[in-house]
Length: 335
Image (cartoon, rainbow, N blue to C red):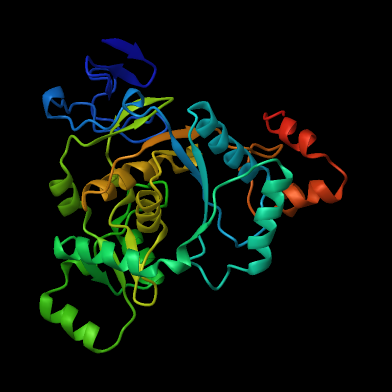
């Protein structure tokens, strides 16, 4: 067993929390782990594939065509391609265009132009989420058949008011988790609201989901090791809405399975969501991927880049006369 600054590694190679010094606290190693006093028998852990069992890797870059690519996107795309090349694998693309109110053809074309300019190439055809809505509905139906979904009729204001009444609610990576208002509705109340035509979202009952997935489900990051899947700080996330058959969390898991992705590379800011995504793989029996989270590209103030930060868009650098080599070198990927 070896000590680390975030816990200790057991004989199975699984990261565990510090037991005495951190007892009763939640530990953060770029993710959330179980409370420190909990001990899990290594014989009960569900192992994910190791790099040794996968001689090649299939990676992907999956931007949303809702704005111009910035340097953070460029880094993520180059990182994914590099990981595939290291294993003699394949680099794929897909467009996460579920949000049809913000997705635009000019951004879709701009993504392709910017990436080709940077020297990236990928297999065709490019998968577009908007062309696979039936696959997300099928995944939802499977989860519903397991009794893991419930309709939520709450407005954002009602949720905020309930959280305020509750006082010191825990804050997860996406804000305070849903307080479970609609989970307490009776079957008759749910039926009446559905019959009235009210808008609703479909939420995952996380407690039931974890009971089915198993308390010792783990996932593996190639840079940081194995971690116990603990998505509790995300709470009962929305997986679909009345007028939209999927959400990011569900679609990304279905898409990776459909494309045969074996290694998911993405920024450290999405690391907490990986706990949930591993659970969403396990429930319908989808293959477990590996992950590798990477650093984020930030501005001078250390703030993560956003699409609204047009000054950092790749096309802006192109228009200012930068070469692709200079842009790549700026983010640590020289030719």
